[in-house]
Amino acid sequence: MSGKRTASRTGTRAVPAGSKKRPASKITPGRRRNPTAERSFGRRAVRPASALMQWLEDMREGSFAMRPFSIATVALIVAVGFYGLFVGGHVAAAGKGVAFQANKLLALAGFSIEDVTVTGRTHADPQQLLSALGIRRGDPIFGFDTEDARQRVERVDWVKSATVTRLLPDAIRIDVVERKPFAIWQRGGELSVVDADGQPITDENVQSYANLPFIVGFGGAREAHDILALMADAQPQLLSRVRAFVRVGDRRWNLRLENGVDVKLPEVGVEKALSDIVALDQTYKIFSRDIESVDLRLPDRVTVTLTSEAAAERSDALAAQVSAKSGDRLKTLNGTINPAKTGSAHAGGNT
Picture 1 (spheres, rainbow, N blue to C red):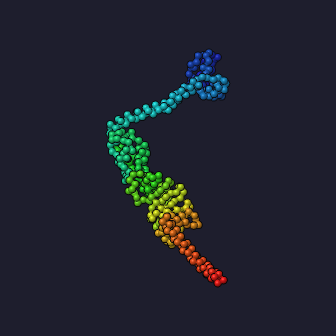
Picture 2: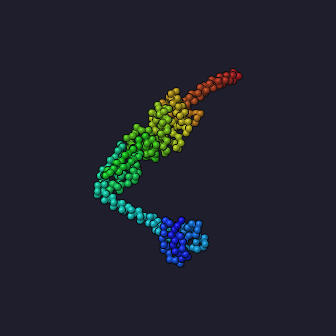
Picture 3: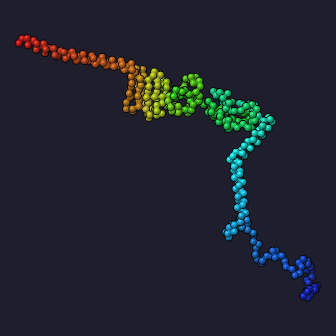
């Protein structure tokens, strides 16, 4: 193969046909390449260590740089400053101020309270409900706290639960669920209308609910539902004759009947005691007699206490019976003794 010969510093060399001429090197002869750009054959470039790793390495070698501590100190000071602002209420006060001004602007734009609607109300006083809301016409509607208002409304008489809703742009709606009157509760000389859970509803106008069961004693309102339900199911006729349910020691009940008789129920076995007293009345008509109380607290006996008048009459009757029996005995004794005396006298006379 023939080729073109070229000259070189060391001599001539053959250049293959068709080969391209290499571009001339830009490196000045006699100068070395950049040593940082050279790589050892077969080695990869080593990635520089991160700042954290370098700091840990310095600590391991005993070289403690001050920069990380300075940064940590500055961060701690900033954190303490923000904590003081929040704890001191400065941030909250500033936020409230901004929100108040924004609400005033929105109220001027038409977002103000102009109407209040109440649903579900039967007994609750509407003026008390409005007072519990704590608002005035024209107040910013976005500044109205519905949750706080709900809690205040639920403290109004008759209100069991409430929902307060903001209706944009200018209305507030209150949905009320009222308590249902269940009984009248007397404790310490005070009267209240209570619901089935024993929660007081109101202390006003109690006389309007005179048809409700009358509960007396501390703890009575809480336990009244059970005794009333039991009697309504087991002894409805006796329930209609009860004028008052008296809670004794928050342990048991006394039933004050319409004729003034007290039925003393036990702590346990109330259903059986009620059945026994109804059976006794059907047999002996004890509730129609002059009795003061019927004691059912002992399971093996029933104790009946007479009224003072009946007890006096019974005492007089017993005394009369005792006197009559004593007179008969005296006559018998006289009939036995007199003949002997007569005979003796007569015999003595004959002697």
